[in-house]
Image (cartoon, rainbow, N blue to C red):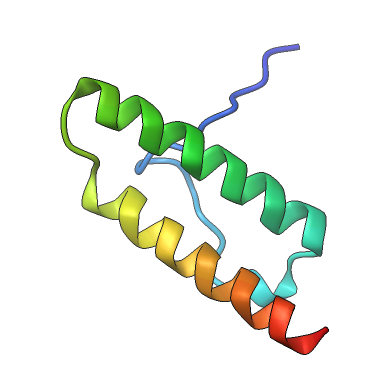
Length: 67
């Protein structure tokens, strides 16, 4: 079984992160960070990857404030 540990800017991304459970958001966060690291290794990161990271961070912060 092949597992992709990164999420490229071309890969589908959830429109609404609030419907995901905590584990799914954490996995998404990890995949975005891995993609960002790979993009930095090649030069500059893609704006879409940075935007996705910001969206996930906002959702994680929102969830943290709820607890």
